[in-house]
Image (tube, rainbow, N blue to C red):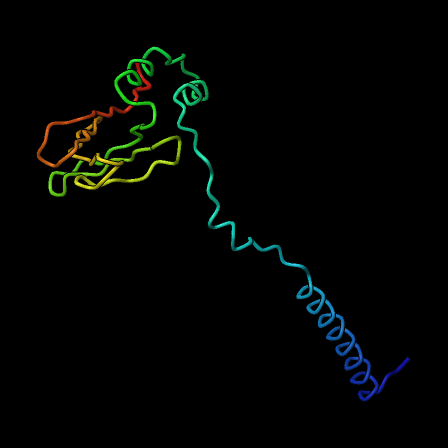
Length: 148
């Protein structure tokens, strides 16, 4: 069977048009595919952190630290817990202090922590609270040590 050149071009053109139509349909449906996006609120997700040394020690496979936390708690009032210290020689430093079970807040040396108490000084694992900047220390908060 013999085909002329016009007939060949016609069948090639129809084949190309059908293939292009199929490709365009595929692209259309791929673009319509639902895209899973991360909600904007996920970037502001805050995970609560427990400040219980017992729970942290058990989570990390350690022994009970009841004895060491009892000694440290006996020296500090139960309503204030020192959770972190950033000691700085130029600016005096900052202490993270949790009051009345609320999340810890940063306090710079010289700022008021509670009624009548201000942060007087910080060292590596200790924060001293006093009534005035030059007065004697009224209270010393120490970080709880999880190691024995």
